[in-house]
Image 1 (tube, rainbow, N blue to C red):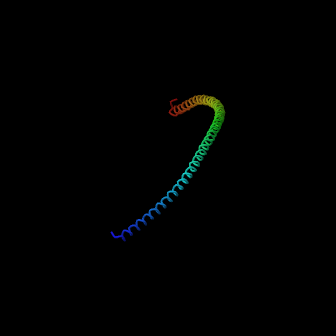
Image 2: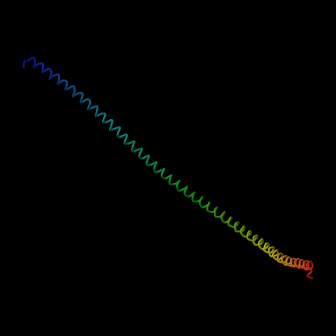
Length: 161
């Protein structure tokens, strides 16, 4: 190998070493920037964790307070509904009793009127029956008289008498 090639090779190696050192410097700069970024990310993660814990505590607190409020509202409404139900039950019982009395009174009144009407009609029907019986007797007597008179007229007409 000629010395010229050898010198060229040395220059190239020197340039490569220089480039490698430059690249190493760049890599070290990148590493230090990455460490800084990692530290900032760690700080941000810690802040996010703190905010997350704070929000979780707030949500737990809100859940507990709203749960208590819902429980108290449920209890209050349950009591009000119970009282309302009892009040309506009493009112319904009172109306039922009142209407029951009115129905019983109406039933008694109608039964009395029906009995009175039945007695009156029974008396009238009995009177009509007696009247018809008397009319039958009169009809028989008159019919007999008519037949007798007719026979008498016939007997005289045929000169039987």
